[in-house]
Image (tube, rainbow, N blue to C red):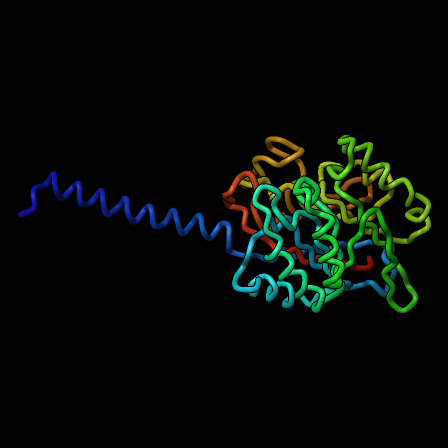
Length: 286
């Protein structure tokens, strides 16, 4: 017979091993299980030809890979059949710079739909952005650096703006720099029936509203890193603890903000109840 004390020790050891395995599996799944979040945005101002227009947004990749040659992530994007793809900053991580995973991804995205990119803070803090930008342009990515484009469907147009992350400026004062980036487009925004903005930082939503932006697409918050039931995100850069803007759709003063939870990690290496996501947005005429 096995002594009771030895039996209890073995039982404890077996349970500890099982618990450890479950913890490792949980940790891995939280960082690697890809989800798709669907959002619908309705507006009376949206031109009728853009009714049903499909946008896929990706953000904050931070060198992350999802299968060989990004196969799982590319498949998720393809499944949405987007008309356009937005990538809202932080393709790379400045602390462990590796541009290859993101370049492999972007080279495939441009074959799915026109792909637009704006910088995040990590592009600038890496000190290697100029080289990265040249490779993105060579791959066929539309890089918007305080620039605008008109998206057109059968003569109906909407305005697309993309601004640099304010970290790229010598003077790091977020609101002032963001206003400097948007001021040249004030008349263009006013004359446009509908305006989309790509801007990395969601915490500047009130500033975007001042310019009459209809929909802003942001990332940066990493979904709050840890998502708590009935609370939301725990912490986000630029917003601190219990941030206001971490994931999904927000509406204020006739302006909408879409925040991607992102795909990768940076300073905090673990997501909890905050799976990496592809955001699929459908515009509808109300």
